[in-house]
Amino acid sequence: MPGPRKLPDRDELAVWRDFVETTDRLRSRITTRLHDDTGLSSGDYAVLLALSEAPGNRLRSSALAAHIDWERSRLSHHLGRMERRDLIHRESSPDDSRGAEIILSPTGASAFHAATVPHLRAVREIFVDALTPEQLKAAGEIAAALRAHFR
Amino acid sequence: MPGPRKLPDRDELAVWRDFVETTDRLRSRITTRLHDDTGLSSGDYAVLLALSEAPGNRLRSSALAAHIDWERSRLSHHLGRMERRDLIHRESSPDDSRGAEIILSPTGASAFHAATVPHLRAVREIFVDALTPEQLKAAGEIAAALRAHFR
Image 1 (tube, rainbow over the protein chains, first blue to last red):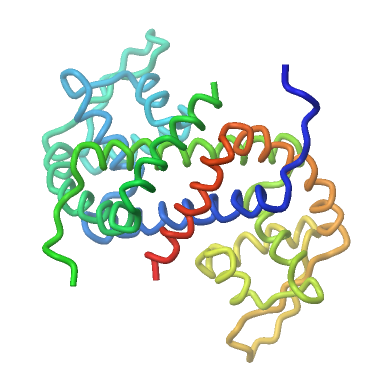
Image 2: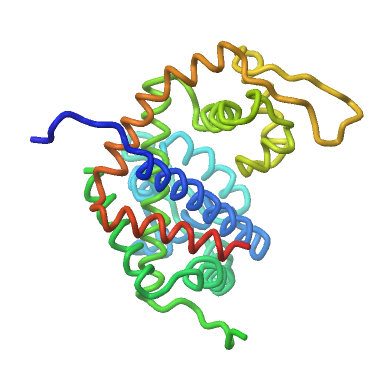
């Protein structure tokens, strides 16, 4: 049983603010580079990545929402915009509560393929190159500890 | 001089994906808790925090935008909504390119004050409690290394 909750002390709070502000800037720098280099938003990329790794390049919208940790309504609007750009197709089955099936289109597969190298280069330059091997290892351990604690 | 850029290897890429997905979920959990507990969005909180720490509780909109790392147009829309909720006031000076002066209102100061303890409690429960003291220290060092590399 945990004891009574204290508030973070000054040092803990300073680390929190540093960490959350810096990871926010990290995300925005990677997102800007992705968009400048490839025309894809981070949401586009997350959807294309999930579909490209799914069996048969297709996923139910409910599974896709869980996979990328988005609300279904937000995802649904985003998928509408991606469908109009021919990056994905949707096969609706109105009586299925798990939602439409989302399918990677040839255009989407080709956009994802073309984005891979520029995106990986940005990840290397902005994230990997900033850290020592020990810091990179620690980043993985911190992520694992936070994830385990979410549950 | 750095050598030719390589792409991240499989392990580096796994750490990147883990790290970015997990910090995204961390942010969304803290944001949801903040909103549930206090009615403030993370943008509201960032603005109120910056103003509450500024001399005289006032900042030029240009300085505020730089401080919280937002585009000025996005900030301007957000400040309009905060002004309608009486959380801030704006004093415009049309010939000043640094933008209007943004002032913390008594309502804003009181909303920020009331949010402090619930927000700090969420930071402790969701972030600090998830990590060992060594991991917390490493999180601060990773943030510092990333920030130094942005420049």
